[in-house]
Image: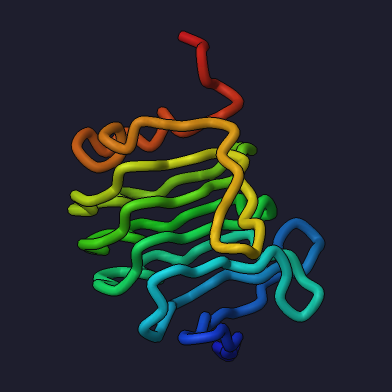
Length: 152
């Protein structure tokens, strides 16, 4: 499938469509641009965004904050690795399949929130705060499984 471009204010998201369990979905394949804050849309071309591909945001030095949509189901290997200045990420509160080392070497990552929504005014709502050290120092993405939180 051919890679297509979705333009943002100071950047672009590149994506591919794919058939997943009898439905058409969007997979973000890469990010390009100088934006420091990125809100990944829940839909592109009226299709749900369900995945961020491996290495999609790898080594994006300008990236500070990112909001991921509630439609997201999967984040691939090294998707945000080496984003040296990434400080905050908002992930959906549902179950997400995390790849390997998604936040590797993101030493500035201080806040991972679940179920938040970008409010369009430069802020976000953060119903759940999570320990960023769990994914940066220990690479334990299973701790971000909201459905299993509090279980053995």
